[in-house]
Length: 128
Image (cartoon, rainbow, N blue to C red; front, side):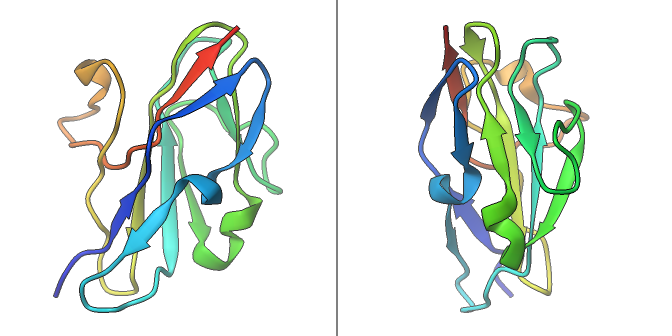
């Protein structure tokens, strides 16, 4: 059974700019299974770093795993931070059978947490 894969390219967000995360993602599964859930993780710890917004929480704390149903993906937004820098966002998908791997795109490999390899390519560079 193949694991699901989420990919995206790097994106730039300006100060307090908002973007729907669904527009950054591409999903594939070699078995043809549709995505059932997604998990997101934003590793910025600076007070001015970017953050996620969902209808359930207007400002998700950094280093918090957010799990959403694939049908609710359009309700996940990311906001650019208040300071120049790089944000590293991780994402993975669940196809109803198993979770895909975590992957990241960023400029600093020290973003790994607990030895987990990060998963997606959605790093938003924040420009002031």
